[in-house]
Image (cartoon, rainbow, N blue to C red; front, side, top):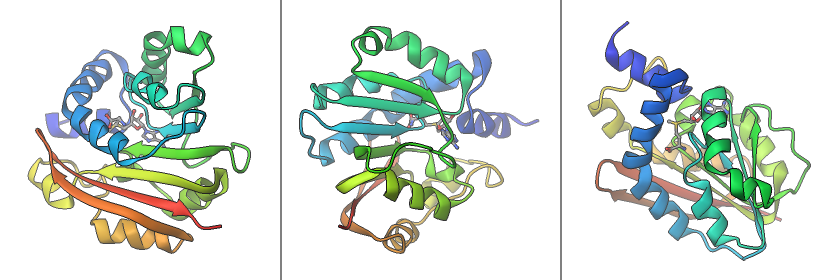
Length: 208
Ligand SMILES: C[S@@+](CC[C@H](N)C(=O)[O-])C[C@H]1O[C@@H](n2cnc3c(N)ncnc32)[C@H](O)[C@@H]1O
């Protein structure tokens, strides 16, 4: 197994000690992307926010600052990431500001109209069934709720040598069309070259 293949697998589902190291690297590389994404959204203090694919969950604390009277739910499929995310956020979990759950984006199983905002950074590359996912995301969003998807450009991913058997590379237009075809309205779509990588952020709203 080559190192790029191993790294791509770990990015998809970080596992064990190497997975922890990869997640710490993601914390550094993806910090500007998170800052950009969170600044693009306007939060009310009591909102309910879902983050999908939290990695080691280090960013959840900064989301709680945006919704001090709300609840932040973080989900992931990796037991290693869930373990560290729970450790990092133990205090806020006890205060019921954060809940961390093992869930697959392909099978969300939340009550309809639960969340005001849904964010997911660097996970769209791994979506097996985008239609099923977007139908569920639409259902669990409240009316006028917003979803933010952030990801690297196809060009950057190819240049960086990500494995195309593990990652699906997306053009921003494809993401926008996908969202629109699932009844979302695009409210913002930006591209920015950040410190370590480039970034698309697409924000879409649930039509009522
Ligand atoms: C590339 S990492 C991104 C982590 C973090 N969002 C970031 O940008 O730094 C992808 C994360 O999504 C999780 N993930 C992958 N497929 C998933 C799925 N089907 N459902 C939920 N989480 C998933 C992985 O376990 C991993 O923690």
